[in-house]
Length: 460
Image 1: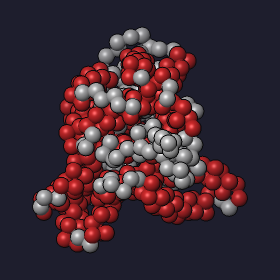
Image 2: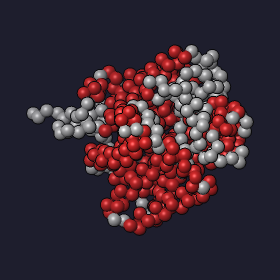
Image 3: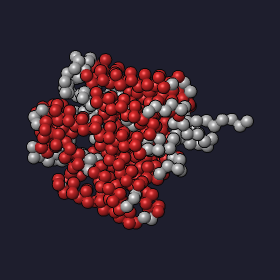
Image 4: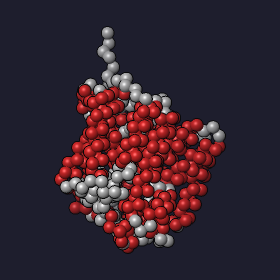
């Protein structure tokens, strides 16, 4: 008899040719046959990781949370060393738990989607009411919202110039930086700050609740529309890694992912002109939060370009342009200026960090920055093409194109954070089983280990 085909972590057959399932997959193959993939073990490990995260959030302030407890000081502040150990162990357990959950599913474990959503919703309800863990971005959101609520321009005024209780919570890295977010993000932030007033804790709390609601809405929609609702639930709403990164961190990327899920649904259904207009509108709203969401729009246009569906392309682009024009007309095109300054930033562990150091020591900062700015988009497109070839051909092109572009961006962009993977995970939940998921887990895990300091400086 011929040997049985090897099965990847996510249940897809592994080809004997060179592929992402073969390259560096030995560890995942060992894990898939270990006790880790037993449902009770995987669930227990994931739960332990979330419990540690909750303890860190409830013990603010510490080395991995904002500088003040929000909304309530539930426990005494956790010592710096203890919080660091707790956060790293929490991330490790959640990553291992996710591997176990997906492995158990590939072995036939199929929990109720409704139960998965219920467990995820209960976890989100707790985490969203704690002090943000792993990032201080919510404090920046609140400060920009306060500036806008007072009638100022967050694309000119910095949190440091705002001063007061809001500025006290903002990380030193962003204290003198105007908003790099779009007008839609500013409207959301301003609405929260209008209610919060002079109380930054209330503004941040409201932003956390909105973020948690968006996370659950995206999870519910994925479960209802995915071909495999169980796998979609494990990939999103019951994904312990995403709960740590997106819900506990309170990041705007959650809202972008929720809009992306709806946009992809409209683009795939395409029952009429209304769906194309809705898809373009949703992409425009997502870009109004972060400009990087334009990759989602390109992913949706890819199959239409192949089909030469010019009318559909025109409708989507027109709706996108209209909502973008309305948004940026509100504040003016100068709202794009902070993005130019931010585009020169390089993070760890980006491969461009080494290029930057070498270039600055040889040809100088200006030339190095120019080379990086030109090289990374070219390499991103090349990698996206390669990733797209590795995705099973039966995957919807709108989903696979958005996944490939987003994943390539995470890997090639000079500045990359773990929460930037939100939309990629949402698209992954709609893909057929593919070994690429192991690389998404690995990429997200490495970034999470490198960036979790809650605004107190890099912890790696």
